[in-house]
Length: 76
Image (cartoon, rainbow, N blue to C red; front, side):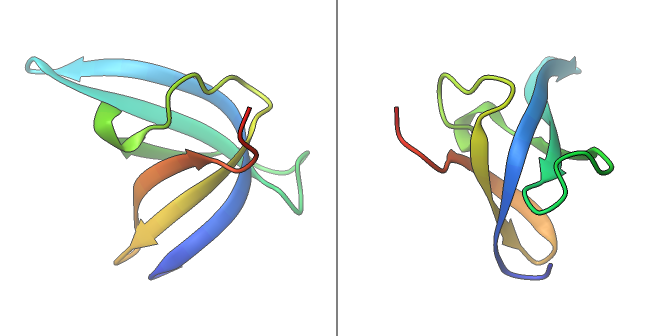
């Protein structure tokens, strides 16, 4: 996807640090195929909704083919 949003199911969030810069690897499955392949996106912590847990429905915001934000689809 070039620009827009995509619905997905969160599988896992893995915080990482590269040269002191913290990022998050977000592992997710497509909402239409939850048993299908797991995809990965790397975003900064400021782009992640707080309190996300595995199994949560999420919305991925894309800009120029890259994920720029991860949001919870259904507020708690």
